Amino acid sequence: MTAADPTPAFVREQDFAVRQHQGTRENQEDSYSLAETTLPGDAPASRLLLVVGDGLGGHAGGSVASYLAVNAFLRSFEGRSGKVPDRLRGALDTANETLGLVSARMPAVAPSMGTTLLALLVGRDRVQWISVGDSPLFLFRDGKLSRLNADHSFAPELESRVREGSLTEEEAERHPGRHRLQSALLGSPIALVDLPANPHALEPGDVLIAASDGILTLAMRAIERILTYGRDSSAGKLADALIFAVRQANHPRQDNTTVALVKIA
Image (cartoon, rainbow, N blue to C red):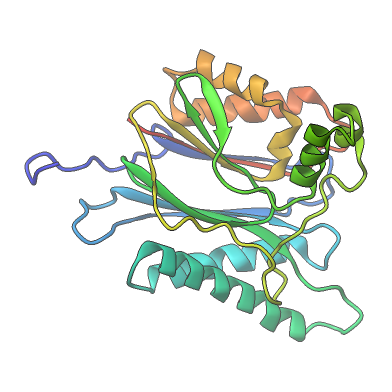
């Protein structure tokens, strides 16, 4: 883009939108935050910084943990300079340290505060991210949905066993430990972090979905159908359609669901 033809700013509801559904849980333990931002040389508001946290229900104050981590991440990233991966990792460490400090002030009998965290910096031509936990980052391109970030639950291990033949698909799907996390923000050293060194290229027509794991009630094919049928719809309407599909599935133990969707024009 030239100075006379700047990268257009992202427009809320048209280009990006966020929706939430509490599901059958007593509380909404997902938190999110977003900000328009720039890198050196960018046109104003030409990038989005989007952060999603899924508080751990088995820990004290899951909703508080996700809120604190998401907002600490956002403030820390905006206050840093340097290369994007370094800023993402520094902000993640700040969010984790914030949870550790708060947990240290709580009664010793209480479990640590914990949350997953997925953060992405999105421009018209590329996306960079950091994630800890099982919250998925999906890319929809040419009618196909793929997951970009790592899954830090036990599910990938079970899927590996299916490929090896030691488990059937049904056994893996019903395994009681399938959703057990191998990594999360708990205020202690982080076991696993997904932080690619290089950005992922984007193309016009791409759709990004950053979500909490409640969206996994829907099969990949079901998400593909919704995005395919709504390819000319706004980001807001697509996010509405995904949440509606989650509600219609009527899962008896439906988890909190957050859907943050970005359309690349």
